[in-house]
Amino acid sequence: MASSAPPHRRKNAREGIVGLRRYSAWFAMALIALAVAELALFVGQRVVQSWQDHSRHVAMLARDTYALALDRNAAVSAYLVDRAAEQAAMAHADGARLDSSLDALAALTADNAHQHARVIAMATAVRAWNQAFVVPALAGSIAVPRAPGVAAEAFGRVRAAFATFLTAEDVL
Image (cartoon, rainbow, N blue to C red; front, side, top):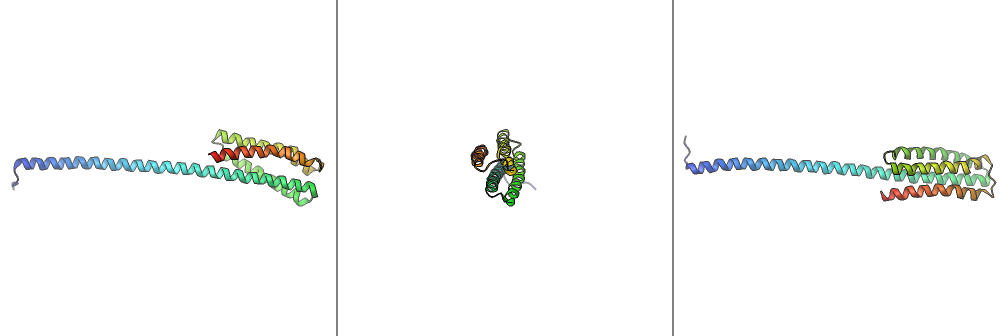
């Protein structure tokens, strides 16, 4: 069965089909490229979101750790005033939670040298405060009139270390 179209029309129709196939192939490649770009953007957004969540978690834990240090300082100061056993017990419990929280912060910041160094500075300040004020106060070797000055001096370094860390975290 012969086509009734003239030969030049058949040739143009074949070229049109070839051209349509070529454009379809380009269109399919463009769609694939768009899908790959969209996937890359999605993965990039998930990575950024993960880092933002991590940063929020670290900042929240640092604030909670600072609150524990403040609670412990208040409990030790209260113990010095009234020598109540429950204040000493609270100070000891806060100390254990404070150490645990500092360890958790150190683990969470291990992948960032600057952050980790600031956590180590906080832990060092807390240890120095414990040695200079908390341990002697709970042992009864600090006189009450002298205690506020010792507490303020020792806890000032803790406060400064936490302020440095939290300021840097807020920037992140």
